[in-house]
Structures are given as C-alpha cells and as structure tokens.
Amino acid sequence: MDELTGIFRYQRTTDLHRARARSICTVLSGLDARDRSETATSAMDYALAHHFLEGVELAARSGDGDTLSWYRTHPTSIPPHWFTPTPIGPTIVQCPDPTTLLRSPLADTPYHLLGPSTEPASSRAAELVATAFDIAAEHGFGDLIANHSPIVCLLIERRLDEPLNSWAISRLPGTVFLDHVGDPTILARDLVHEAGHNWLNDALAAAGIGLDDGKTWNSPWKNTHRPTFGFLHSCWAFPLTMLFAARAIGRVPEVLATYLAQHRQKLATTDADHDCALAAITDIELRERLRMVHALAQRG
Image (cartoon, rainbow, N blue to C red; front, side, top):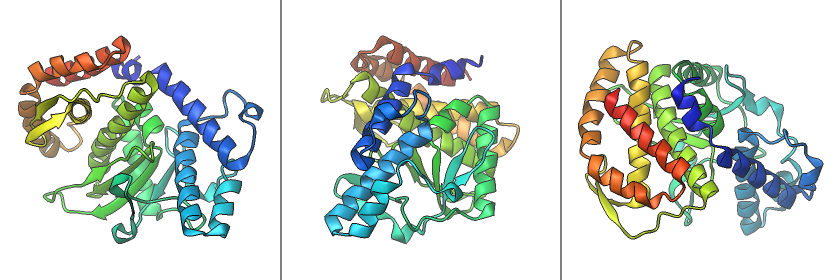
C-alpha cells in the first residue's frame, strides 16, 4: 500500500462522516438514522448533507416554502443526473457563474449550493474532472480526492500564466471551488490542495481539536504571521501538492518543476515553527501524519 494511502485513511474521520450525515438526514427528513445500514453513508452523503442543511436554512430565512420542502424531501433521493462517474467513484461537477455565488456572514468566501434547479456541468467539464481524479489516484491521492472533494465547482478558466484561485469552506465539507486552466494534471494538483484542507478540517473536528491557542507563526505562503490553525493548514496542504507535483512531474515537467522549486524554498523556512506548532495537535496519531507529510515533501 502506498504510504500516502495510510496517511489519508483516518478512522475517526470516517466515523465523523457517518455520524454527521445520518444526523443531518434525520433532522431534515425525519427518517430514523437507525433505518440506514452501516454501509449506507459515504463521503458523498456527508458532502450532500451539508448542502441540504445549508439550503434548508437559507430557504427558511427567506420564507421560500417550496424550496424548503424540496430540501427536506430529497436527502435520501438525490437526482441521479447530478452524478458524473469517475475511476474512483461518482462525483458532482458544477460550473457556476462566479457572479452568482452566494455569500453568508458566517463564511469568509463565496459558495455555490446544490438545489432543485441544479443541472450537471457540460460534458467537457465532467471529462476534465474525471481525468483529474484519475491522475490524482494514479499518483497516490485517490482516497484523499474521493473522500474530501466529491463535489467539484469549476469557476473561471484562465491562462497558465494567470493566478488560480481555489478554496474550500467549512460549512460545505467535501466541496471544492477552483479556477482552472483546462489541464487535468494542474487541476489534479489543485484538487489535492483543497481536498487536503477538507481532510484536515474533518480530522481536527473528529479528534476534537480546536487550535485556538492564541499563538501565531510566520507563513511564507501568506507572507504574514498566521494563527496555529492557518499555519498548520498551509504546512499540510502545500506539502501535499508538492508530493503530487514530484510524482506527476513527467506530465507537465516545466510547470511542476517550477512549482516544486518555489515551494521547497518556502517549506524549508517552516521547519522549526512547524515542529513547535504541532504541539497543539493533542492526538498523537494525527500529529504524526502531519509531521510525516511535511517531512516527505522536503525529501521529495
């Protein structure tokens, strides 16, 4: 088994996905979670449950009874046309207009919500994501992508020399938002990054770790001091993309070699601080996974 596979398989997170998805389904639909089998809950169920929970809240706040009813009656009967098959399982691909993204006082970044008017993305977009999933899996990141980015929202298609924006938000775990350049390898790299953020958010929640110790650390990626939470996120997600780039470098050599050179320099400056910041991770198993990825990226 690839060493990364073992790092990504964290039983506490699997248990969290199962418990939260079932709890949300019970709240929204009134179905007793005990009526569902032990194998019924997947990462996709978990991601969709949060879309439905958010949708119910928005519909209730706006007094939209029809939409509220739709969200409450569909948690266990997702429209099949939403799904795109990939080599590592079904995903949902969306291409929302960035100007229509929703904003909430509870979220720093905009987001897209699945709902009664959701239609699948174009075949070109679906093929791009499916190929990116395949590439990620080929290089050891299949579990990470499948379990922490089953819902992919492609935003602006940009040139390779333009900055690419991507993000994930804690209110919609399992959903990622990305600009792209139309290249599946570059998209796979950025999927690894955002899925990594979702993985760490879930792992911290599953282990009951808040990271609110009041300390700050110098982050070379933001060129500023960041709280422990943000610093450890950077020291996890960027090393993951470095590991991917090193493994997939033959696909787009010039781009990934440049990427690796830039990030190796930045990562090297975090050694001492990262070792100290890891003391905030009270779960030994989780702490060692973060330490291992940081070390592997330096060696790779």
